[in-house]
Image 1 (tube, rainbow over the protein chains, first blue to last red):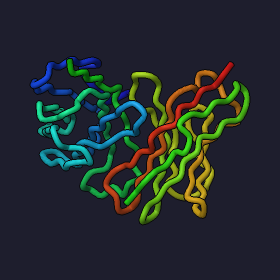
Image 2 (image 1 turned 45 degrees about the vertical axis):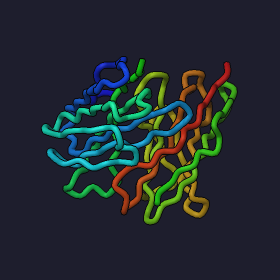
Image 3 (image 1 turned 60 degrees about the vertical axis):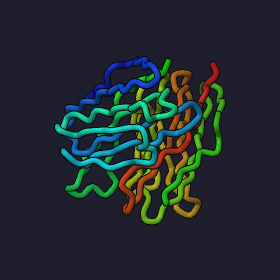
Amino acid sequence: DGGITQSPKYLFRKEGQNVTLSCEQNLNHDAMYWYRQDPGQGLRLIYYSQIVNDFQKGDIAEGYSVSREKKESFPLTVTSAQKNPTAFYLCASSIDGLAGGVGTDTQYFGPGTRLTVL
Amino acid sequence: AQSVAQPEDQVNVAEGNPLTVKCTYSVSGNPYLFWYVQYPNRGLQFLLKYITGDNLVKGSYGFEAEFNKSQTSFHLKKPSALVSDSALYFCAVRDTYGQNFVFGPGTRLSVLP
């Protein structure tokens, strides 16, 4: 998990509240990603960012929002519009960005945040 | 579109025996293939990847994987399993046209003492 931190480790939310999950990396990576993991399923991509001030929707972006104001940081907000937000959220980063990664770069993952809606 | 299949939800193997975790893929261009391991309540840890070259790739903790283009497979192997290898294993693929990884559903490996 070295180089990528996520906080908090556990998060509880009441229905109707927005919550923000933190992801910070000190690897000088251009690209950052947010995934959601549910029991028995693989990882599903929520949002990704290849460069500062730019981000793209992944496969399940509805009910989520992100920002990328700094290279090191890629916070994820889970909004009240997300119908089933209880899950394990994983942040990742990789070297490639708009400079031209062709898919060979490894993604490195943070330790994850477990979000539970009460 | 890219896709990854891990046909076994669960693999059980006795300690000291060889293990195989299977992965097959579908991509449009050349595949870039990855294996990750996840321990309970932790993030994913990178094990190894195939980009080009030798079809047998060696990675962390004694794991290796064999790329087979004709069978579109990238099975993970280890000659002698340890109890500490028990975890959830994910195969992932990326191609020259795709922006992102596609992960398989995961295979839970249990190594029995």
